Length: 204
Image (cartoon, rainbow, N blue to C red; front, side, top):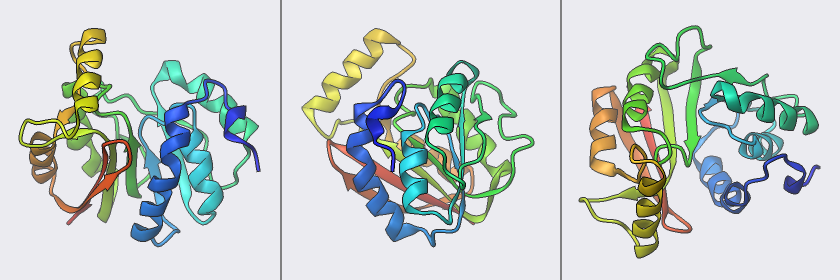
């Protein structure tokens, strides 16, 4: 089994959080779902989870400029249950048009990187691809009651906004409002290592 450090553009954060996320997935999934991953990045999560849940069908995706790197990494780490990477750009309102229906939409460490308009686009478009009773899983840092869960997250938020004013750690309450508007019910809010959360919603 290939080691993670063989990935082009290796992400230490993805390597650190993969085990606790996998443990959460094992408790939430049957193991045979089709999973659309938004913002697959280097593909480290796609490969790690697919190797350990071989009956999943994993559909990685990213924006156009990221796809060549993602494709190269997936070709280097052959997994029969990973589909060829898809172009998914949340700046496009119809981003889910033409995608195969899935039981799970998963994304990790993306909401604080993308703009708020793209967060809105994610929720408004997911009904077109998420099956009835399907789930949305978001991993990353969040604020609660307009407060950070740690000083480290507050510093991270300042760094993000200095780099890009449209980015930043999102308020759980605002994200929850978008989920409610999209017909999703919060199923779990799991505390994860390094002041992160795994939020899980289910579609009616």
